[in-house]
Length: 426
Image (cartoon, rainbow, N blue to C red; front, side, top):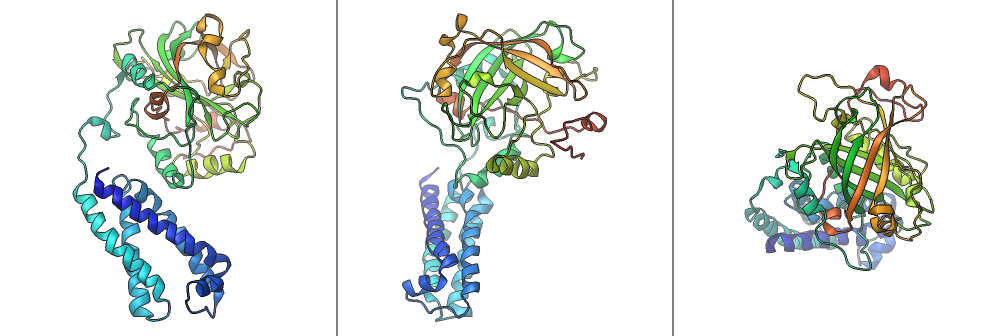
């Protein structure tokens, strides 16, 4: 951000806060607010109250532009040019009735318009392919580990703030981006759902007979980069914690070989669950949402705007890994990771301390790879993921990205999906 963009952000945020300071009281006590501001009381307070509500709702659309005018330019323009109509309304269309509101919009106009122009005239030019979300030709395991293990945290471990009031609208954009952005490493960014995590490296091994293709087939071995994280604010024992494990499977054992890894995403329970140990839960690509209102809002409303069946993450990036173009592909419907039997239980308040590898035998945490189809009752164990190195650091929380593939419907098989999650066919 250059100096013009920084000042523009400050002024837009000043206008947003002003809208809230005036708009919120106007909703509940319109005439009290007008008297406080030495303005004429309203003869129809209901409409005045409704005007306050509209002001507050409109201000929410300014927030992305206030946070990043280059990334959310339309929002920045809206935040700026929504002010001049207020000046015309209170000075010319209905003069001398509520002049204070016209003065506020006029002052903001005088600052925001020139700052917006200067901000856009000084827009930085992209210097690397990282600035183009569609520019991706793979990565090496080594470089992903170097970035993912960079910037180790000290003690006590920091708490990364996830989605909040100022980033809620950004969540819509990020949810859509995840479906198309295949990069393994991104420029510094904030994770809004799974903000706190632990990154691991290790091995993916399929040891059992399998009818599936790609890296679900017997004998498949590859390098794996994984991130264990918790969704939401609760990260300590006693909180409702929604554990997720996202991973990248590289179709090679050579850390310097460039490849496009197969990504997968698993979660235990989207609402979160209270467990003594974070390793007690099973992680699947088709988790239950649960009764939590916030989880339902994010999954059923926000994510569904960009994908038809957001709770279901298919694993075809793994079953197509290493398959020649045009080759036969067989993918399991369901994928589940479970901590291997005999794994000791570690007592720790923060889940990140519980997951430190030095607390486990041979400094290794093992998850079993299990699959089944919708019409099958039992899980089949195919192999293991062995996590043998880890880092709790800024690179893990702020740079590593996991692509989430869009749902590809298979009508005959999807009709067998659990009834609690109805299938929507595109």
